Image (cartoon, rainbow, N blue to C red):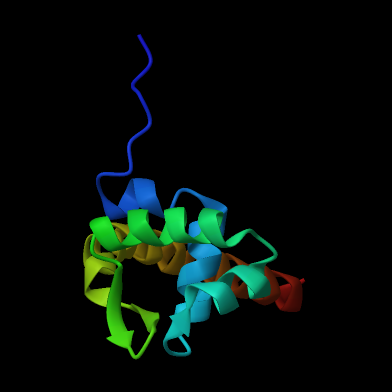
Length: 113
């Protein structure tokens, strides 16, 4: 039986491309929901829904500024994702190191011929 989709953690929350787009915009600073929605070409209710999910998993914070609510990135919530991806970073770095060693061996072999 397939597992129901959930947005209870950062991994599931960022699985949605539009949420990743929101986080990318929030790296530059705080935005009101109307500006985020306009920038991303989505309705304000849809943007609000995505922001709610991101806020619930701790990736976005909100503060009141007069009549506006400003949303900002809380990157601390991405720490589990960063730690998990770190293993893959080491894998790719090792793969590139092995590829470089192979290319250097090929060059030496060609020079000897």
